[in-house]
Structures are given as structure tokens and as C-alpha cells.
Amino acid sequence: MKKNLFLYLFVFASLIALYALVTGNKKSNANDKKINELMVTITQLEDSLQAARIKQADLQYFSLDNNDDALAFYDHLGLENPTSYIEDKLMETNEQKGDNPLIPYEGMNSDFKLNKIKVLNHKWIVTDFSDGKYWGDLIIKYQINDDRSVDFTLMDHLLYSRSN
Image (cartoon, one colour):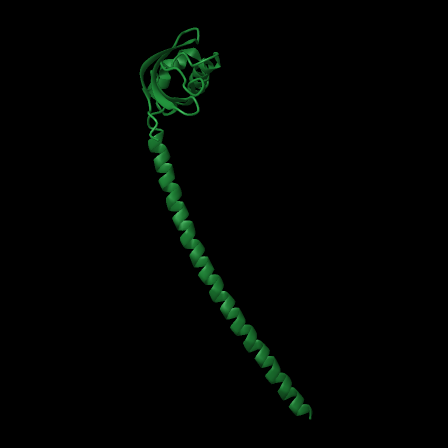
């Protein structure tokens, strides 16, 4: 009787061990598959991040911040961040009542105001403007004077037509 009991216990323990082995093997295979999928995803994300970095570098090519020769024009003024300074001075033109004085159009929906600004170098700025419904672009020439005042001159402009 004792002999049969040990035999049954041995068979039962063997079945439990076999079940644990099969289950563990399936989990291990599933985990390996998941790891491989995540590695592929990581590789794809790293590639897209690298592509985004290259695109960002291309977009920053025409930028005062990345142009040491253009920045050298403002060394004597001691400006810590010339781009922000110029953008702030240009945005101050929006504070006047009515349309922005640099925009050669009268607002149709409301007053035309500047929105986005891109300082290209030590002489030129590209900006867009809108009245909430109509919009356009400006090319502005600027000069920072020795007293840190900034003179803006409109070089060219474009108002987009609505296509409804």
C-alpha cells in the first residue's frame, strides 16, 4: 500500500513538473516574441527620431541662432538672446490699437496682427499675420541700433485669397 502511494505521488509530482515545464516554456516563448516585437519597435522609433533630428537641423539652417557670422553683428550690444529680443520688439508692434503698422492691409474680419516670426539672419525676418479669417506673410528687413532700438522695414508682403 505504501509502495502504491509513493508511486501515485511520484506520478502526480511528475505531471505537475511537466505542466510547469510546458507552461513556463510557452510563457518564455511569448516573452521572447514580445521582446523581439519591442526591439523592432525601438529600432523604428530610433530611426524616426533620427529622421526628425535631421529634419529639425534642416529647418534651423536659416536661423539667426545657428548663424555665428550673423550673431557676430550683435556682439557689441551684449544681447544674451538676439532672436528673442528681436521677436519681442516685433511683437510690440501688435500692441498698437488697430491693424499692425507693418501690415499694408486693413483687417477685414478684425485687426491684422502678427502671429509667427522667424528671424532668418542679421537682416531679415519672415512672419505671418492674420485677422482670424484672412492671413498672409511678410518679409521684413530690420536693424538693431546702438541704443538697442530696432527699426523694421517692410520688404514684401502677400495676402492669401480665400478659396471657398
